[in-house]
Length: 267
Image (cartoon, rainbow, N blue to C red; front, side):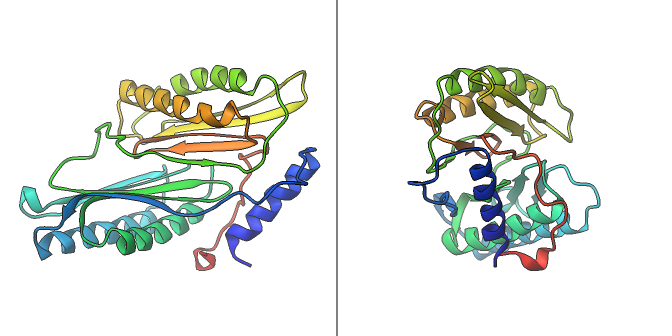
């Protein structure tokens, strides 16, 4: 059984234990998303630079003993032919899970944006989400550039009165904490019981650590606005991710992912 399926089964079992009605529920949709723009490469050199930059991301995460959920690289060459690439993954999981996510998304982006000047792609797992992007001829490091957003909501609904209000209150605190992080980590998480302790809510937010405090706040504020469509329905879980940040909530704990993971099991 693929790792995604195993983790998904654990999530469903935990949901049953937590008293969620699954009679009409379907498993959460897990698939890939992407956006390409800017037209085709103007030379074979640019395509080689793009492929080299994506390859280097995989080398960086594999060979780096420290892990902070973010890697960036830039190819050499003429300014108009240089390709910048970056990888963004959740901080609450072991490096092996993010390495697997990176491998899958790099393959996906090469297939679906084979010659485009700029692209971003995401992949979603029950415990994490990751993003890969690249751009030709322009800087993306330390730049708030959230031109593309991806949204993933659960098929489950939850009977609650105060989800949207509780979520807004939590995010307002967490985004300030995350934005106040350093150049290696801009992440914050928390959990709370609400509706007279009937429900437990788990929330985490994260920015790419290259952003300034002000830009991280801007990105997370936009993310909190994007996710309100899920909390108002209200859905059991939801997440939104851009090129620079993400906001996520769930009614099952998202803070205890598998402690070990073999990248040979990527699926």
